[in-house]
Picture 1 (cartoon, helix red, strand yellow):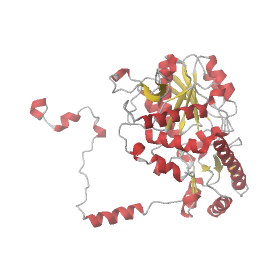
Picture 2 (cartoon, one colour):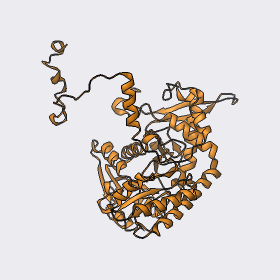
Picture 3 (cartoon, rainbow, N blue to C red):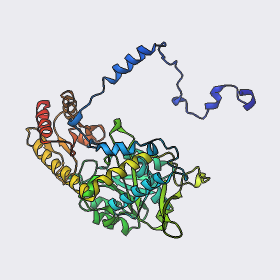
Picture 4 (cartoon, rainbow, N blue to C red):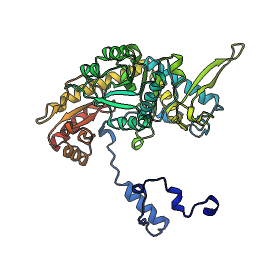
Length: 436
């Protein structure tokens, strides 16, 4: 084969790979084991996993929620779970209808005019939204704030750097919120989009969103907003304060934590033709028969690369999180508008209560004095050791923020949800006191 293709060795096939990426050593592969030995080894490895049950207060993007049994029951029906062509034009009417309903609910939730179905996760939705903005206005500069998710920023860099896009980070103010003065100074007619999260990575609700939208639009930029969907049962929809594109993660909408994934990427936008034509992924539409007696569903737009578009494609999203989108649709259908509002108010109330409860402990303080939803930042000495110590007591908090933010080496996140009872919150306080 090497002679036919004209190379002297297999190594020549990888000549374009930089040397420092190549593994030149021998692999340490153990001897073969019996089936019983392999089972024992797997069991020993899995036994190292820690389960916090209802004492999981971990934040940072993946959250523990109660998921009604009917959500899993319906989402695991074979029509949804095992259907191979979830992305194809020939998807079943049932799958297409479920995805159409998902899109409709996301539009209701965000106040936007159109949503796709769907993206991989929040980070990829953000990356695609920034590329979408660049295609719409032809600009290549992105502004965002240092209070957004660090890992999302890393994915955003990866998505945009190959296109020559320039990402600039604006420092947040002393309250952990977007600094409007710095934004005004850095905003120019070269800026393609400004990305803001509310609640942001620290759980802080941005309360000057109208002003931010005005600053962005004055220079012709696009306003991209990152949301946590349950918070919209209580907070204003981004569409009401001038968001052009909305992104977020649907993990909290009936999707289990699953050791970190898969989740669900939300992407919605204004309904202008220029936006619709540049939206990645696919859009499901509804129509009726000529006599109006029957409703039908169809994929009305797909922009992926393998539909002969190649380099002209707006997205390389292929097999996406269709089952996760169906799960979110089922969850939201069961909850309804009133239920979502009740859930959001419950989480907000418990968040405020827990923050006050923990801040009363000696040596503990709230890092930011701002409105919060779901999670908040606690400031203590030796915070990384405190997080680790609480884990040994069976309580999960964090992540430790010094991992990403040098100025927050004394801080970590605590996240609250509807599953936490008064007994759980009291035990959290007791455990933090012990760890200190």
